[in-house]
Length: 276
Image 1 (cartoon, rainbow, N blue to C red):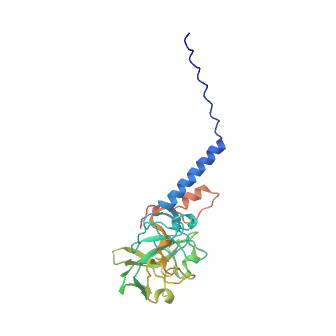
Image 2 (image 1 turned 180 degrees about the horizontal axis):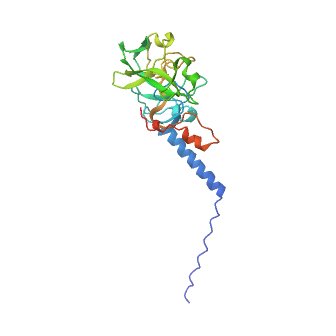
């Protein structure tokens, strides 16, 4: 008598996955992807102050690339875990605009321009930067004109510089100059008035492993010209988070969260795509 083939056991049905569990798994994966992206590729940054006028306005949003100068604890959100030193570290180039973590207990993200590298000597005389004993060329150009808006009003402009534009609207008008570094990098700066503590300084020598940073709005920038907590002093390389590369959005502040139409009317699309 022939053997009867065994009947295969029915497959065990997989228990249905919880919709809540699926959502949580997706959110965890998304959070990890965003963390990796912000820590190692690029991150957004918004401009809260006028220290980098005329290039950056309050209300500008820009992307910062994270790989240019290597990675440190400050490449990670909130500086955790506190990894010492830098990995794949590279020095910035004079003229780069960088985002860094400020020193002190109230540390926060700040954006400034690199003026001096390790070993450089820097001094400011009558508003002109002297780099390694040679004045950086500073050429007077047309005034910088900015309409007064919700995020840059008469108080921020300063009564001395408030003016009326061709169309009769209130504007802010600042003296503007072009600086050109020895490597050929050129950019605009503002020099509003003769302020001795900002325009006439002592001689600085940048220590090893540090950079000397300045804001383009020279009379309204707490930077390496001033020691902490008044300014920033020299900034260690490991505190640099990344390099500013492009503006992706900008708003003049004239909007209300409850009025979606104002979100578009307050936008400054002409600033989108501006590089450094």
